[in-house]
Image 1 (cartoon, rainbow, N blue to C red):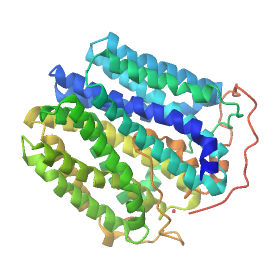
Image 2: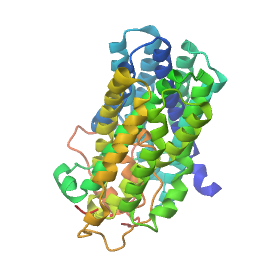
Image 3: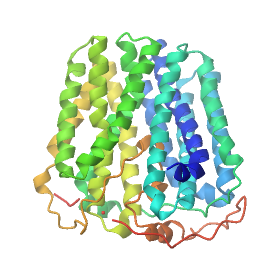
Image 4: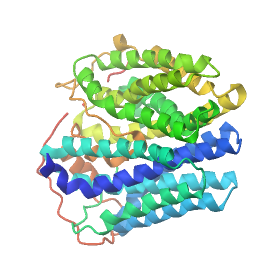
Length: 449
């Protein structure tokens, strides 16, 4: 195991530092605005802007990498993100903060694309599952540690923004000092929205619902916890415990996903989420113990929805379309995560903070209504379905190029669809690219209602 992880530790460290900064920034901004008695609508708008930037970065990041190379693109984006973070401390005008959040999201997506393409280049076919798991652990762990910083440093001064900028400065170091030849440029395969809406509608509905719920959680849960009377340290512990639940549930989820019908599991988890969120949705003032227990239980199930939807969709899509499927799922998630914080923010402004969990419960019930296992015809199910479940990194921390790490995606398809030269100017790279390795292995693949 140590021999497998050793070549990737620099990239894992870069991912870890990025997610520490990103997780801390999201919670800090929510608490800062709560302390200033700013409407929850603005808090939701900031998180929506971040996800909009992530979606935008997924569209243009590969062009930047192809134009200037991986190291230069990563370094430039890390510098821009660090500057945008510090910009929050220089300007108090909220529309400017929304613009800065778009820039942060766009820059981070470009950084994810560099790291994921680099991990793919260095991973052997037999290592892809392990490398993918390490990336997921680094992502979740970074988000948790970002929340725990608030426990050690509860003040909401500019020092926290400096810490976020420090994280983005440190994530530069392992990439800038690498002695490895950078990988050949990768680019996302074209999406096929009409095809996937017809082929995997229930999976897309689940991904959209997960985006609505999880995007609202990251943007507005700190505000909700603050309005429940929690101190900054307690908010950090609450957020950290909820995100940690998303990490620990992945392995039990994999065991269940490989043994039981995935559409039934999605429906069941959505129903449990609706029930778990109900106490927090109806109680205006929640006892501390109930808040932490119910919040943890909600997170256990809400962080299951996206990985299950990915596995469910791969069971019903042919191997040569899985790269496009990954891009479609991430864009769908990003659309939901952009809309969710805005909608939930309006509800919290009009009816109180408990409406955040009422929002979770409502959309969980929508998924219970929408996901119908008996309507799955299995007409397009692949021969070896159900495919082996893969624990997915939080969708806040992955790009369309994450398909190149997913062991369910045929390695030769990755080479054919993501390394063919895009119609752009000749890339000016930092060092001559390696010849792509095409001798790798193959793998695997909903049906419409």
